[in-house]
Image 1 (cartoon, rainbow, N blue to C red):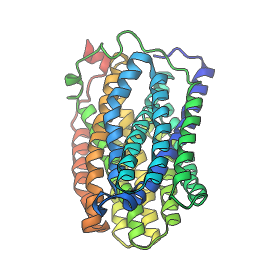
Image 2 (tube, rainbow, N blue to C red):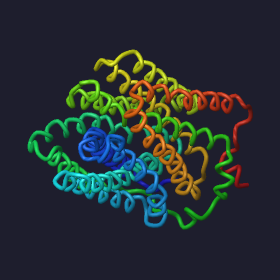
Image 3 (tube, rainbow, N blue to C red):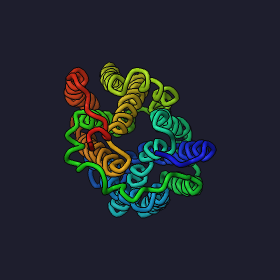
Length: 405
């Protein structure tokens, strides 16, 4: 259901894509600097990746409140709240670098929590784009907004490279100030977003969540989305620090992250068409297989190219797995149910992702990069088998409209 003119639809999708690019750059800054600053300030090396884990905790804990704000006041209110959190994240991180020591470390962790809150709101852009268009264009609109991440893959690492030496000490202080400024610009762009207002029944009407989450279709979507995002974050969190530990430069890890993020979002130019033609389930399966291949490549060596190929294939796998899962979520709810179902899906995804993020840093510090890669295979294999069973189980779930009747 949508009530926007064609011009408003185009404007909204472009604004969301641009805001996605700017906000994605903020996340890249967090991942490019988080483990390095954590390693410098943490009281023990075991806590080096804790700031990135807290980033993910912020994503998980803020999905449901963001959904509640969107359901009551509209998505734009949630977007602007997220942008404000992004500004605060950059400013707190900058102050943390000046404070230094253990106090600075905990302040930096607080900054990454707000950064995670911002990222949680940003990921709802894909569902907002689907709200703005007719039902037959939802998958393509969702995919188009994610294309903004291609720009993020260029802007984010370059933002770090251009600013990290403007003031050598404290490290990355100027980078974090730039991060806050970029979030502020994103907020200004989001002011012009026009979306259908939430209907009175939204958030309260429709089926109980307990009924919706028992649908095999929802189980498949939430499982694949969670595993795709968890493994992507699991490996990406550890990769920059692993490269540093194996003697590779920060510039090399920044470039690896750049290609990773481009690979995450670049396929969005055609992922929507793939989903429409082959179905979300097949696209999800392809994504999971690519993630497995990326881990296998990482086990082949420790040269820069091994890390770069691992990160690039990991990004491709995430795109197909996560966007396929997101498209399948859209088939699981009615208009009255969408805010609750989408928020619950993201809560599941980011909750599991948070657990994986906490494990990643400890595994890398104690057992090394090889172990991080090997640990990714069991959940991947279980998910592939589960999706194969669901795909060939026979009769599909009824549509949300049929289920309500």
